[in-house]
Length: 312
Image 1 (spheres, rainbow, N blue to C red):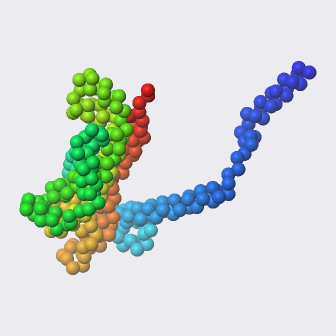
Image 2: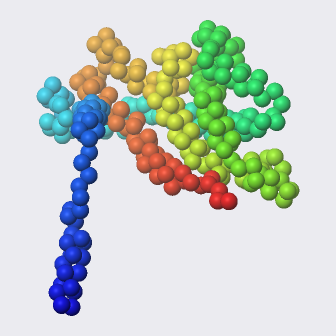
């Protein structure tokens, strides 16, 4: 009797330990259909993004005599386009690359610092004229004076054909300011009160207590600013002429390169035959900084998502 009971217990534990022997949860048909449709749409957009990138990659490394047959793989490998970009013939490309680095770095640092410092007092209910100042920022975000007044202002400052015109017009970002403000409002008052009791002033409270807690927010806003400034050329179209190649950001330089008509200008034979390949190689080089930054920023944001959490 005892042996039969032990055998029964062993067999029951064996079957309960096996995978897939428990009751299966049947999902509703509607959920399965919606999930399938979502995956199909997602896959379509992934293909829509990846195929052009692979096409540019193939053109960059392809022999120009076989460009018409290129889709997503090079027909015949050729590195002459990259050799041309790294030669002395492409000084304009690398000057615009450096200009974009300067613009992106200066705007990212100054813009996010100013926005965070403006958002912190606006997150306090006892801030004087809080509602009026917030309304002012929101109005400037929704309505603009137009291009002509800004252009005349930059001309009066002698900043046309200068990268500082782009920097000054890109410093303010009200959306990031509101993002910082929303986070600062969630900071527990007990932490600030404890720091104030210990003798911390306003600046020390902000930089030593609040900023370390807001690092994930700073990472997100800085990354969005970097992408926006690196890929943007709207301000350059207004303030910089196509002849001022020394002051062009990289995105504007690539735009001019893509829209110029090589048949009506005095280009050498190599540039005429390799223009499509050189353009593709330029685009590949231009996206390298963003590709290098993105994995580290995403990892940092994920690891710091609970940095400002407080346990009471």
